[in-house]
Image (tube, rainbow, N blue to C red; front, side, top):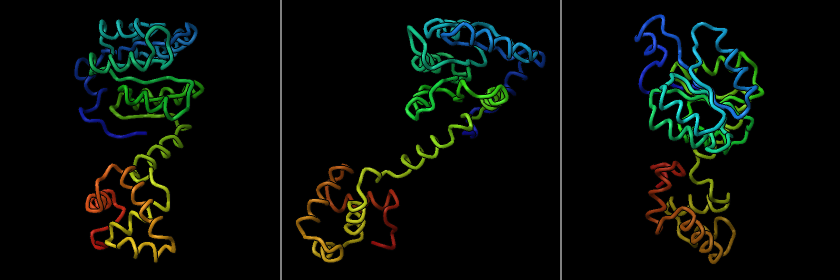
Length: 233
């Protein structure tokens, strides 16, 4: 997931502070081997300076507040204070720190939690070195990034979030559309070949699920969400 981020290019901001200044990085992971491996990988490139490592969320938070890194690479599942909560606190206290979550989980709730907490990127631990470096570069360029393997997670999330009527069954959507288009209960019953009582039950369920208080409100909701067009009213 890549997209422009308000506030300009983070790498440009670093360069404006001095052409020779390295990108300051904090690494946080509960596994020492992972921290050491990441540090060795980054420090092979002169543009990075690892200014601290942490094995739990509280140390991660303390390091970031104290050293104000340009980049935090963190694991979402750390002891003491988990990485997601640490990231949430760091986002509010260190607004210029870009954050890349390095996780073992490809589950949608974990990805969502990281971005909700303020992360700018999400990379799986099983990714290649090239993918990790690309993720770091994207995040530092004031974009958002996820591992290529997570594309399906983004598509599923987009499809669900983009359809506010997804809480309705297919039949309820059909009934809601017909009501919003101005049809009466009897007309809907005749059109769908069901009883008026069944239509009334569907109407009650629709109003409850969408939290609207009548057909007029349902019509406005349907227009706002694209269930019907203005021409259909």
